[in-house]
Length: 132
Image 1: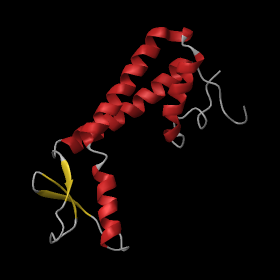
Image 2 (image 1 turned 135 degrees about the vertical axis):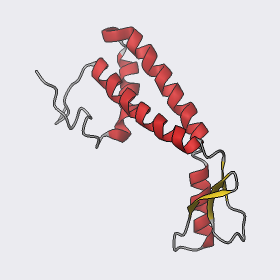
Image 3 (image 1 turned 45 degrees about the horizontal axis):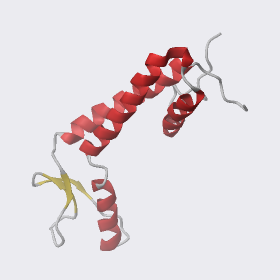
Image 4 (image 1 turned 90 degrees about the vertical axis):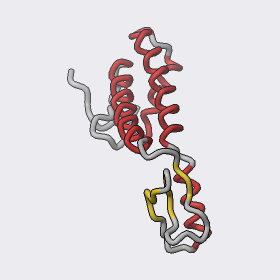
């Protein structure tokens, strides 16, 4: 197992739920601006806009094609889509919480995999040893 600290299913679920809650808060703030779109070609400033307002200028320094591709990538992460993804994760966590300590190892593996992008977070089990 290396340096990894073994934690209970409840700890993994609580850790991931806290990260989901953080991301949902941010996605709700971003969603208030409406649907994101890249600015139209030839616009005075290239970037991402919502409801006619420029939210973000994009200037990669690698040319218009790269700027456009970065804009497309950002637009593909619409706050509404992020919220749907986070809602699905919450449903998984709700189901896992109802199972308690009898959570199947496969479900716990899924929770741990969803928690992996947050491995550098101070509360992640690999970084924070569990108290005895």
